[in-house]
Image (cartoon, rainbow, N blue to C red):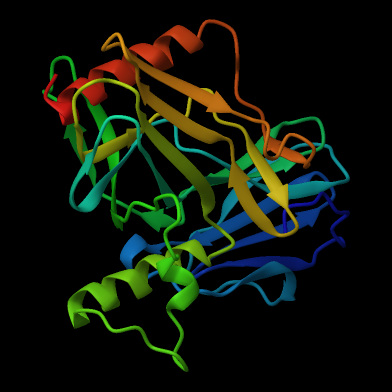
Amino acid sequence: MWNFFVPKESQWYCWKLDGASLWMRKNGEEWRFAASSIPFKQIQNDSAGPLFVDAPSELSIAFAVAPGKKAALRPHPSTAPYLVSARNDVKIYPGTEAQFDIALPPIFRIELENGLSLFESLPFVTPYTWFGDKVSGDLCLSLPIELDPQCKNEQGYFERIDSNNPISLDPIMQESLQRAAQYLSCRSLIHCKIVVKNRSKEPLNVKRLAIFTSLMNVYQKQDNLVSDTVIITAAADDSLQTNIDDSAYKNLPKIHAAPKTGLNELLVMKGVSFLRSIAGL
């Protein structure tokens, strides 16, 4: 879905993006594009492309003029932070850690091999909300996903959610878990792991997580999208640290390369800010 290819002249192509869609047509140096978006809550597990299709109907057409032979649909993380909430208040005690799996809606761009972006689309509509106050806070994309922590030696919920082998849970919780599992199965979303470690002397209360993507790379794992692991640590000296671990996927093809220069300090400062907020420090 994400590889560069040589489009046939005057042929429309379509990418199915889990309920949303994006179209492209090349004719010499003229490029045409169209897109249809859906609310993020209406996402469906259905992605494929590029597919041969007829011209889209009843959609606005965007144009670009540029030389180029190969093009690709390339996903990128949002420049605005993502804000997600825990299903319940999560208290992480000293010496323990919890992992959260999250699926992030990307920005999609049609790009040429030289990196030139011809068209950009946000296929999944999400509301914006402030994290912190409007003076020193951040305007974030608010995702309707409720996080569940995964802990050491815990049997995974998602492995047990199966129509042939239902698990015994409160119906509301089971529905929410199944919805979360659906997000995590969508190939057009960026799958990210967040590890929160408590090395301090006090419990850490986690209610919301703001995910800053400044240092986050995105990789192609077959047709799936995965990112670096975000590690948040409350240290023994009561300092708070945010790091990016790129060891898990560094041998995979990289779709989005994060800028490095001058951003590490920014990410750490923002990590400190939001951790102090959620931990009450």
